[in-house]
Image (tube, rainbow, N blue to C red; front, top):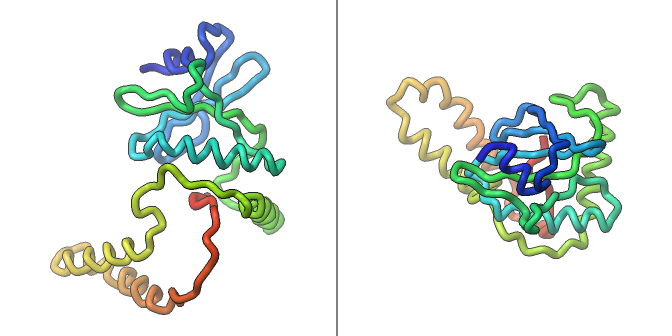
Length: 195
């Protein structure tokens, strides 16, 4: 399915549309779509992300909006769907929020403002009771990652790569042992993919 076919699922027969590549994502291809005076973000999603994630995004964005937190909103298809799926990928559209994106922090003040907004974001979710419909398997699963690291180091002792990576791998394993895993923290909704 090409972009025009996808856009027809959202804006049937609208000739007043054009788009351009936007940003430089690592997994997904992002476009800015122009429709008259309005702008949207269209993403061709990598299939490693299950489209069920859109149910999570819809619930969280609705909650954030109810708390007056600025967020992109999902644009549903003409048929009321949260995404469009084709043979190779799936697509989603959000409202566009005007502003500037930075690849890295430019100043202490900018870092402070980002931290302030992040705090507002997480505070707004404190009373959100939502049962997530999809999670990436083992995403932020530190025990899983540590076991994989141990196994990778063990499996590669006699390889060229081992000499290059063993110090870093062993350092990570030693630091992990110092973490106090017995601390009980409240279960909360967090962003989990901050850049």
